[in-house]
Length: 48
Image (tube, rainbow, N blue to C red):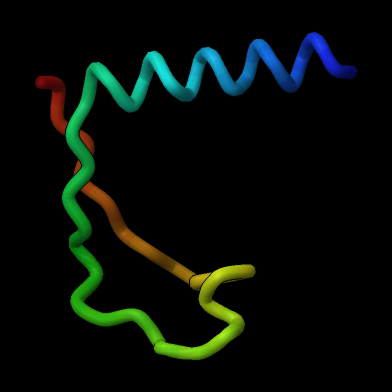
């Protein structure tokens, strides 16, 4: 399990370096719940 989590973190770090994320959703509900579950959040992903 530990190896899988490490591999996932490395894959995510590589992905974040190679693409740009733009938020499409206009607003996010400012509450404590947002940090746990922001709800539907639309993003546009573009290759750098």
